[in-house]
Every structure is written in C-alpha cells, then in structure tokens.
Image (tube, rainbow, N blue to C red; front, side, top):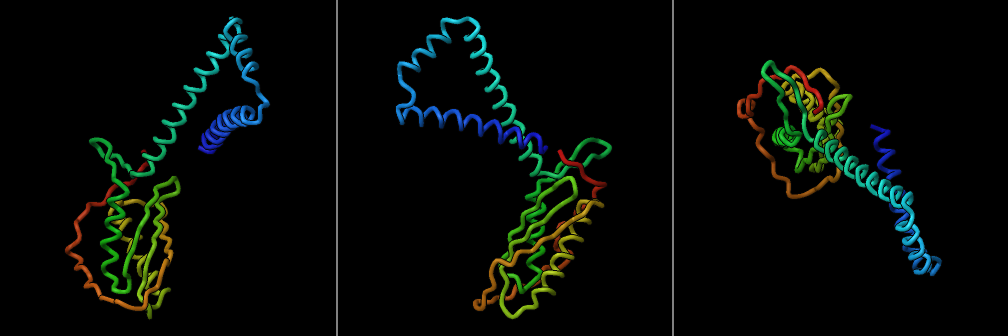
Length: 201
C-alpha cells in the first residue's frame, strides 16, 4: 500500500510540475508561441514523435484512471467491516458501529456530546472519540469506563479477537447547562448476534 501512495504522490506531483512549469514559462515569456508551434509541428511531422507522444498520453490516462480506482476502492474498504459465513460474505458499515457507540454514550450523564470515528485496519479496529464533558467530573474514571464499555460491546457485536483501540479526545469541558441523561436500560439495546470474525473487503 505504501508503494501505491508513493506512486500517486509522484504521478500527481509530476503532472502538477509539468503544467505549472509550462504556465510559468508562458507568463515569463520564457517559452515563445513560435517555439510551441515548432514543437507541435515537429511532433506532427515525425512519425516516431507522434507514436511516442500518443503512447505517453495514453499511458498517463490509464495510470490516472487506475490510481483513482485504487484510491476510491481503498476509501470504500475503510468504510466497512466484512466477515464470511457458511452462505456468503456479510459487510457491516462502520457508521452502524458509530451509531452504537453514540447510543452507549447516553449511559453517561457526564457526557454532553460524543462524536465517534471508527477505522478498520489490518491491526484491528480503532475508535476515536471526540467528547464534550460537563465540569466537576473525574476525567480518568469516566474515560476509562467509556473505553471499557465501548471495547466490550464492539467485541460482543463483531465477535472478533483482533485488537480494539479506543482513543478519547476531550474537546471541551462546559460548566453550565448541565442536564442529566437517564441511562438506557440494557434490554433496550438491539440484540446483535456475535460474528465469527472479520476481514477487510
């Protein structure tokens, strides 16, 4: 994957450099219009130049399309978790896991707002939480309880043994307007059967 990233950076840097250099040369009058016409005439008059130029243009188009597909495919893979059953493959949207985490946060009256971001990678599942807390709370205790609860529920829901990392970022601590939220009863959560594991699509 690192090679693909390097290739993408090199490709788009090269294209930007060529286009940008061409425009700068025109703006500074370093490249005359006559020179440009001369280059185009040479390309059209020489069979070898026409073949080389056409092949280079075709290759750049193919590379650009391929890299775009790879990047879009990579982005799509990161949005789902997949596992195989005896009858086929099942995928779970990471947004569904994020919705579960939001519901779990309602159990904590100390939390005013929570925004989760779930990422599935080769090393497991990473959960990043952006949290707004009310004041006069024990931050180590509340964050530890939140991390343990989320980790346990994700493991139960997905049935995975891979590492689950929960990172908490306290974005703000407010000191007024506190309204306690009634914790959700355990039976109100949707029952989700455990899965046998997951693979990345």
